[in-house]
Length: 168
Image (cartoon, rainbow, N blue to C red; front, side):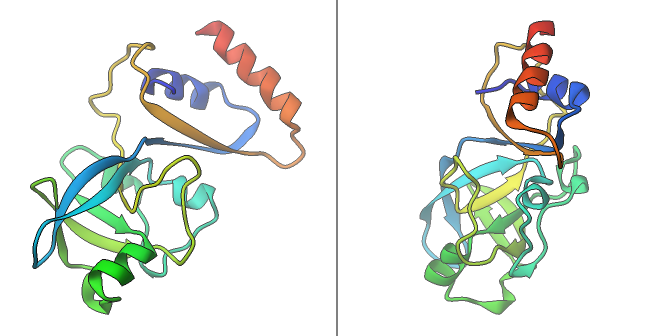
């Protein structure tokens, strides 16, 4: 697990990764859309996690940086299997509302079949904002993914990240 402060330091000191993205472990949530409440797994993610993984949406769009700004409307992206099993592959779902734990979110996209974020079982993704994140390096609740820059070895990445960690 990584703290938001560590993640910020990793991004600032990064010279070996083409991209870094963070996400919270999935949590159990209650969702409602025109029917009875249902259970789902939800994870907040940095919007560029989809780009890092080379994923394009099946319907609509993925999250964008503006979605994570304070005061932005609440949005969500759905997993393909959730869309088909619980929402009957409804093509009109993009742009409709979904209540997640009592808070209304606008559905902006559906990911393609078999898309997943390594280390997460989420079926719904919402934007992760660091606007009110603690500067405490001990507040560890994030998972981080990275894509190496072309020509950078795993060993080079380890050495660079060890140096960043030593400075923390």
